Length: 282
Image (cartoon, rainbow, N blue to C red; front, side, top):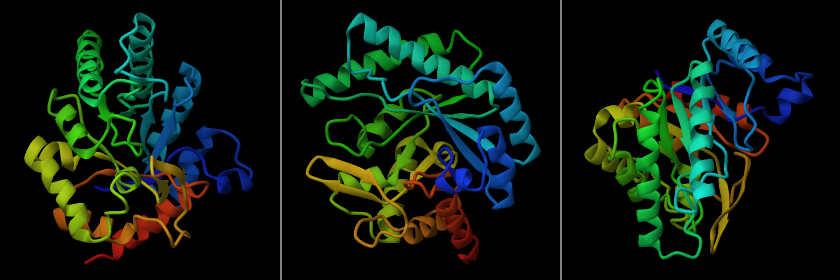
């Protein structure tokens, strides 16, 4: 089953008078949506009590919850304090995900900083693999770690880099952010074949299972010389990518990802637009 939903709560959610994330599952269900990504991005985690309320509502309304780990994670940084914080942030995100009954934890693996690309990647590899030793010491194996493709050239996270990373361990599943990919490839994602090429490369590298159960972020994004600048809505006609060829590629491959809209302020309506279009594809 392909699931669609928003990242966080959109403007309309609040305009309608809703205030708490525990109210989101019922509302999303009324829109025909079946997924919801909760952001731990600023390092704020839910209490067990709020987690249980959100989980109960998600179960009641068939909403699959995923989480996004804090933005501060950088496995390229080898300072002892950074290593400690990286491990703490990802472990806490996975623990929070488990309390919410979810399976996908999106992670930014690192920034190049002033290092050359090779050195930064090797640092990240060691940091992430050391973290996996901690991961396997806890009962978290039903929670996937989803390294995300990134939208700025200074970040580790090209398609090839993410596929390499996800080949290291059975717990690592890709998060394809197609707005990010489009941003660092000068708007290359235009046709169904452009998306099929990425998915097929992933299948060749990781196998069908990890692609079938991958996590996807989708939005239009304005980009420039350094890559991503700002997220846009589906109303934009200048930047891409367009959702139609993307969804046609998903339908053709018969994969079942979770697709999260990251449009600026219109996440849920744009997720609904994608779901409605997907259901019309023959």
